[in-house]
Length: 558
Image (cartoon, rainbow, N blue to C red; front, side, top):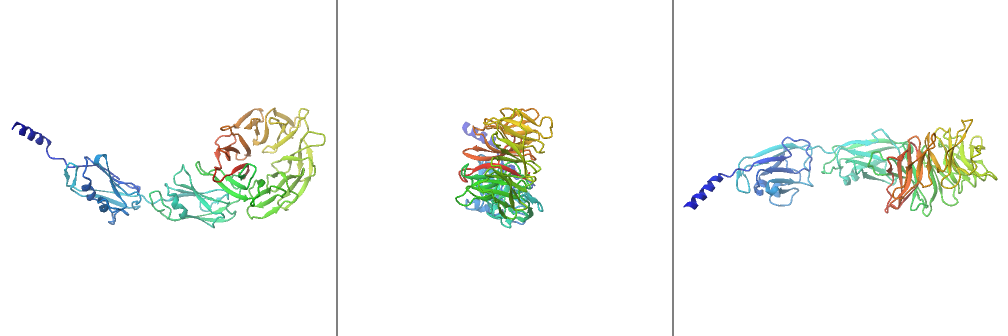
């Protein structure tokens, strides 16, 4: 009797089982803009008998429609449908998953849990529960570049910005460009900006042509929702050089260039490289040089071997053969893009775009490059070797067809070379001496008392003016440095990276930018940086798939 009494006391102390309670739901009651891929989650106070909950669950829109592709009753029986139940936390948390069947957009759903759900211990909650939430709208196109009615450089990418992450595979059938660009286009995502994609034509778009960009409702976000509305954007293409671009040769090796490419700086950080094919060498041939005009309208190219220079109007496609340019060297466009100077057999010739003809400016067989135009396009600087003298800087006027030499300073008796003009044309920098560390001198014709002055001994090869007060030089250690004119001090701005030095460089004075090439991972890549070397970004990402190496760069536009 004592044992029986003790057991009755224990049972009496337990009392009746408490009915299970709902402690949390997701989405919460009255929540709006709910993502269409989120699961329905119900959290209980105690572990539950799964079958009682699953049979009691219903989800309906205001029109009485169930979630698309989701038959809850079938899921409760373990059958095949677009949704499934998942339980966690020892049976306390129920989730209804529908990963490939998103809820309808802009829809209010009511979740109802009928009464008589049962806990794992057998306690019953006889009450029904319900709450409602509303789903988000479909994705929208927040902006494009260019905007409707805007202008795009033929080398630039078309940017499409959605308000959320999108399914990249859906965009190939949703985005179209008309008229269709020659060579087609690709659609590339920005890996760091969700919802941003770039439409990248293989070749430059046709200048002065109006294109139509269409994005249809076939575009899907990552939840599978369709674009809310079809978007049409019209824009006009300007000339190459209407925005900053960099032309350069590319090919399978550093001495076998088969393509001329144009690269544009990224519009926002993370954008993939933007490259356009300007010209391709015929099969079995290669380019010896390629140079875009500063205004971006013309492209001068020469195939290796005994071939003449060809000047192509990139807007019309017209090709002009430059007479007397066979096997030429040192070609340079005038700053106004109206003349192309080059050396042929030591003689200096100038091709004029307007007349489509070339003339000999100087027949001196001793002229050599590099050539440098004064910014006003009125004077050319070259290197000449007078009989019985060291190489000297010669100044030549295409208009007057006159040649003068710089006055030789008593301390400037070694070989002169590498002339570069300042942005204003008031100063001419050049090297004096041979070897990797020549001195850098400055010629200032307006300084009547001392027009020639030495800036720094053992400096390096002048490449270009970075600004009115600094010159870019290649140092003896093959780095790139800035040389200050007023102080004669030199500072390295691009040094080695993992033992790899910059190979070739160009300067955009108006944009205060520096472009250079460097070997990286076995491939020569093109980089763009600020004039002090900071903020460098890669403009190419060549690898074993394309097998290309970048050649010397030159700026167009700016």
